[in-house]
Image 1 (tube, rainbow, N blue to C red):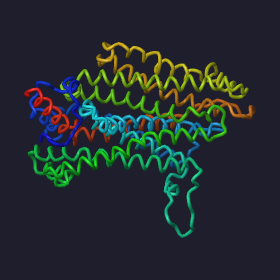
Image 2 (spheres, one colour):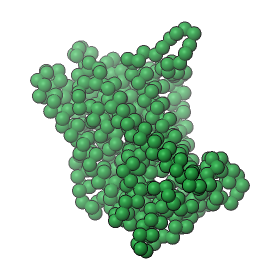
Image 3 (cartoon, one colour):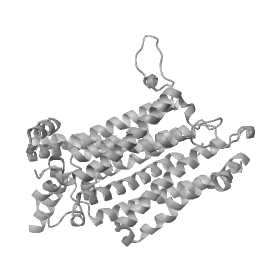
Image 4 (cartoon, rainbow, N blue to C red):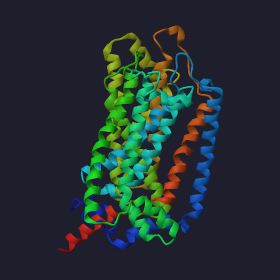
Length: 462
């Protein structure tokens, strides 16, 4: 299924760098679509990953049960640190999910050819990261079984949510972003579901993928409707990336807490979200490249471009660090300066300097193409970025809360065992569905890769 006429994003001379130049068109489908329908060669490695993921998921479920049974008192939150690990990790996971939509939607509209091998895994990453983020506000409520009170639903008591409350913002932001991301990934995968249906040899796989394909037969009318729907959802998804990131920055902006009400926060949070998301995309791309042997589908050029984007978004995030710090001293407000000095030299200064080290210092190695194209070096930098962004969230959320206006309430913060176990368990919440997607769904958009190959070879023949 070559997908002729879909307009997948071929843009000319730079395309061959991103394409498996000597690979026949049919082999693209064989390399990708035989993974879900004939998984025998990957079974042992996949089961090892799946069992490990299930153990982490079990830890998450046990921790969530303890939180529900005993209440949020098992968290390390105190007075004045009302927002501890739950909100910190909520913002970290939600930020990670943004790069997937950005890569797929923005680059679809810009017709960049290198997205073809990465968009599916990036979209799945978004979906799982948003789920991991969305579970935190629910558990942080204290009565998670009443989370639906945040929704403006008709009821006989005429009770409506408090729209000034961050709880309502979380509800609309997470649910809206999750819904649009789900629709976006499903519409984009319909042609590949049809290809998987046609490649399947067992009846149960034919039925499964046939239902997902919605009767797709590759007619010109199918492609026309698909293209319009796919681009429409992309146009809808891009503003959500900025709206959701800016929205949860307003959770801090609109608070009177020192160190939170900064005008640089909305663009700072958008840049940081895309920055951390690119890091996880790199990790997943390198993992799938090694796991499935897709060196011809996820090429060195892909790694190079991802490294450039990681470097660029890292510098935008670094601007937020320096602008926030400069404005604190420039304001001349004594309490603002005291809190900033606590970030730089206080007991929790490790969070600031760790973020600077991983998100700025180590990142400068990406100026060299040899580093960007080296899988091990790029992986180490990407893992460091995720660590640095987590430390940044600690620095932004925890440190100001420990230095309230009333100095008599100043005290430290220490997460408990259940804080850590719930956070570690969310990686299982991410990996279990993701590993199932690896097993059941095409992880590379084969029809878009084949379309770009078809057009390039047709022009080369001319």
